[in-house]
Image 1: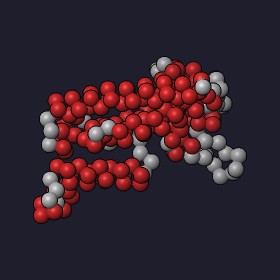
Image 2: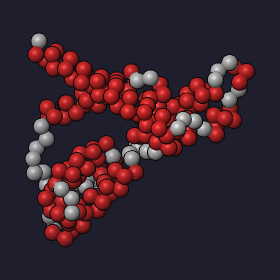
Image 3: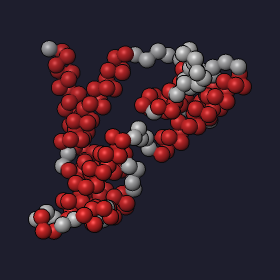
Image 4: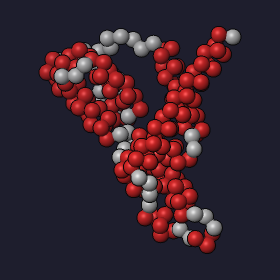
Length: 198
């Protein structure tokens, strides 16, 4: 935001708000592309699960089951599974331990209690693609709010301060964006279903 204020030139005919939104959006996109980011809360949970898996592996002398990890963390098994599923894009959980070619990553050391259905993976990929397309269809301000809230972990108040909007207005725009995304995604899913039937 400070960078936008310093570099804004009113002589160019653009409004500051439009200029700032474009600068902030560009910086966010650059940052997202530059690093493998993940929300802080999720990163903390991933680290906790990784540490527990490693601790149990050393303690038991074998790979722990998902149930054992869940009990140790005092979490539901489904939540542990969800955290591990979310880590698929996080490189730290896939880092190889050791130097040999047959060394295992942390996720490789967890006993697989059920095989992942390839169809589910395809559906997840389709959903992610649909979400990316849906986000592009949102008005610029709503899209920016979604990015700042979900990817940059800013609070509604922080987003309001950045965009010079009230917290309640940001909340309204966020709610509108959620409704629009839900409608777009529902439509995409039904279109895909119709195509698969034909």
